[in-house]
Amino acid sequence: MTARDYLHAGFHDPRTHVYRVVESTVWSLIVLSIVVLVAEAFFPEGSRGDQILRQIDRVLLWLFAIEVSTRILTYHPPVLEVFKQPPLGRVRTEIFGRIRFALTPMMLIDILTVLALVPALRGLRALRLLRLLRSRRFFRYANPFRGLMHAFEEDRLLFTFAFSVLGVETILGGISLFLVERSSNPEIQSVGDGLWWALVTITTVGFGDITPATTLGRVIGGVMMVGGLFTLALFAGVIGHSLLHAVLSIREEQFRMSGYVNHIVVCGYELGSGMLLEVLSKEIDFEEQRVVLFGPYERPRQLPPEFMWIQGDPTKESELGKARIAYSSTVIVTGSRRVKPQQADATTILTVFTIRSALTKSLTARKRKSPVRIIAEVLDSENVQHARTAGSDEVIETRRVGYSLLAHTVVYPGVADATSRMVFAGNQNLYVGPLPQDMVVPATFDEVSRQVRASNGCLVIGVRSPDSGKEEINPGADLMVVPGMELLYLSSKPRLASA
Image 1 (cartoon, helix red, strand yellow):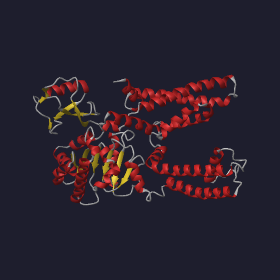
Image 2 (cartoon, one colour; image 1 turned 45 degrees about the vertical axis):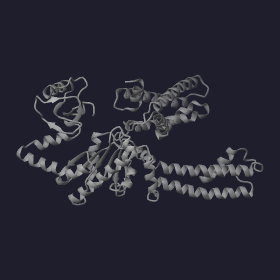
Image 3 (cartoon, rainbow, N blue to C red; image 1 turned 120 degrees about the vertical axis):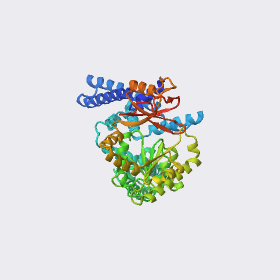
Image 4 (cartoon, rainbow, N blue to C red; image 1 turned 90 degrees about the vertical axis):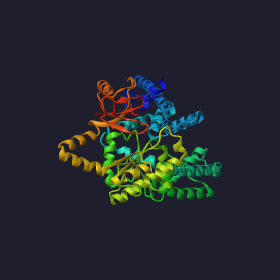
């Protein structure tokens, strides 16, 4: 592992030990800085104790500056994990990826905190209290800020538009009043005075410290007041989502231009598929990998805020761009429970075919290091081959699996309970992984099984050829395992590096 990889793991990979060490250190510094901030209030300004606390605080701020800078510099844009790029394109992606990362809400808070190093901005030190929002321990069961963060992220184009309107109005109004009254109004001595008056007027605060003195100045003030009413209405609409339907196309375009990469797309989600999200949460961390739900209905009210919802028809190739299918890692196509199985499977097959066709035509998909995986749910066994022909990498026969388990447990009692426990995450589940790097092959299946059992504690039950996808479950002990083969094994968690 290179020094860059080590630093990246320390600041961005929660699965590593070094990340936990770094986070613990940062948290200790945050707590210490808050204690120093509170303690300053009990010492008179300029006293010996106040000077010592200021020095300690300055050292802490420099440490925070180093931490924030390192966090930004070691950020690795996810798109580089998916696509091959030429050297110049890679440099451009690295630069703009880090800029976007630095502009995320939590990083902006960290950056503003560090700006307190400037004496005139020492008041920003209080913002370090907001760094407590990074903690998962404080909000283990329900984080009230998560929904706000996701809402801001999903509607950031709308917020950008609203703040742009506010900025343009403030600049135009402030400069106009300065140019009109700088020689006739003693209250306006600089452009800053004009901008301050414009902002106060637009927001309807009206301090009264600056008032127009000329007729033309009052006309400008009247226009600013009316414009302020519309601006406030715009902000109210954005924040209250009252303009959701009117700006749905803007939200879809925002997602099309967003930074979602390596996410999971679930097509055909409906209320009856809620358990899918529950079991997905057992397998993956939604904080690390995003899940996008893509369906023809409005967003269900019961849907948790951490899931992105895209309204559209996945059977139409023109609408697949809304969910950035070419940038995703996996697409799951579920069968509808609202119609007959044959009709549900027909929609599933059409969806798979449409997605595969779009990926074949997409220049973005051709640059990927590994193809997008499509997993389809089929309700009628007759349609399994049709789904594979349409382009599905894996097909799950949900009804057949359930009925087969019911029939098998009639003859062999206890099999259903054992199988159910086996497929649940956290129990002895089935995994696929490559051969251990230190294993000498070719070797017999019996030798490989014993070595893996001794070194990793896994029970190897079969092998798979990654080229053909053919699997052999419980093969003969003398079957030769050759380089490139993958192992099917039972374990409580993945123990062989993911293929």
